[in-house]
Image 1 (tube, rainbow, N blue to C red):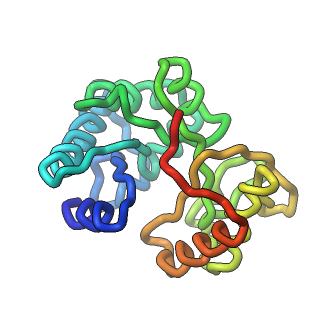
Image 2 (tube, rainbow, N blue to C red):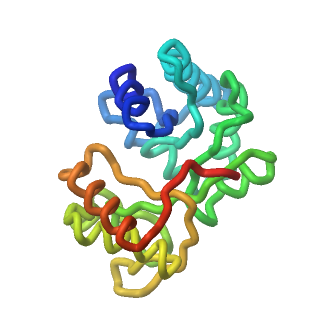
Image 3 (tube, one colour):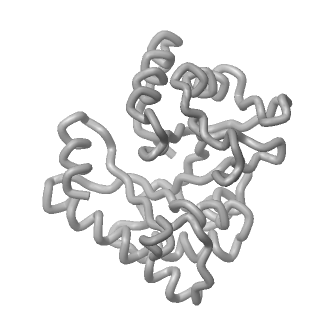
Length: 210
């Protein structure tokens, strides 16, 4: 976390927290049965951990995005979404943090209902199913690893207000922020291609303002 924050500060990048299920062995990508109070505390603890490191380095956390299975569950389950949001609020400065969430999700609706700042997120390195969910990583074609294809998906969000899904249909999704996973093969090359595509389209990339 320290190294990532130092790199962000060096390059003028805003820092965020990415709390997930406390399950390092499976990288937080498998749902866990957790008592609501335990989940709230796990989210709070993770946010405060990175916020503390950022503060010591002279930076601050600006946004929060749930990770992996926790993010996916909060997309559909209002109770899980609320517990994540309670954990964010319990963290130091949590009420000022922007919550990243899928468009039209339980997470986005609950954040807005609780008066929290929220940004709708689109994925440019993942394939979308026609119902708006991400194609599971266990199914072929879930990842978009070709930089040109990822850049095209980014521009589709920007220009067309949505993406083409796995069955060829168009899915309208209005978003405020775009995601590239750091562990997607060729993530750095994808980021460069997307940056150049946005620059060519004369799009301005800036920190989200609710």
